[in-house]
Image (cartoon, rainbow, N blue to C red; front, side, top):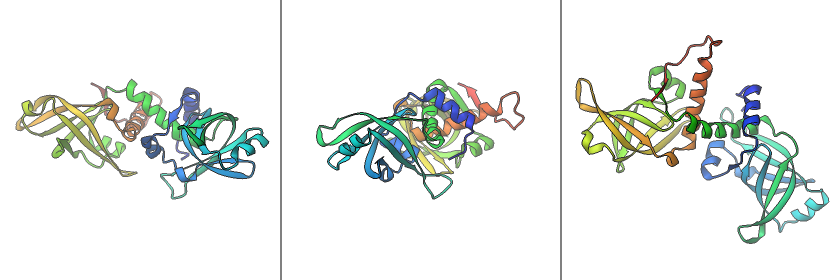
Length: 283
């Protein structure tokens, strides 16, 4: 962690502090939360717990109540600390920290008499590491809607900055991979070039494979061929526009696209003399 500036982290906190993020399997994967190392501390004792959701102001966790935690909370006047641990991209050592909190209430979880959902209110601003990790997810989620039409032309420069391994990839049609070349990508779709006949492909479901590096990740983004156009001078090739299925776009892909487009925006500021990327353009 620690890559973002204090100003950016402060911006994340101010804009998103009241928004809860539910820890689905996909969010667990994107954030790198190490579930086995999440603990609730009360007094000098620790209890394993599961994070159900979190914002910058509080969290909901699930814990076993047959272990004496309720009595301990009563003695501690409901004061606790939530221990969180995340995988670090740049190191083998996890990012681990405590967040001070107060238990504002609890309720049975899943109809079980053994477990409860605890509502934690943070008693201070959480560590910058948590704001950075969760802020990236929230920023990508919101910008994937606001900037869904911005297309990134695939050039050697944009490939490098996106950390895409290659513009040569595959579109899976009814599970069968067909070689293709990326022309552009966006939050909402892509344009590819491949061999084929337009009338047999338009309106068919597909899944586009996108391979990234640093860290190595592969995504299959489901969608549909929306339209086709000829490739000048190449009768055997067609350019196909893919509209991604909005609910099927992986969060990891959204985060990658958001970080690239945010960097482009920063590079294009009038007071920035760095090289700009001629990549983002409206559909």
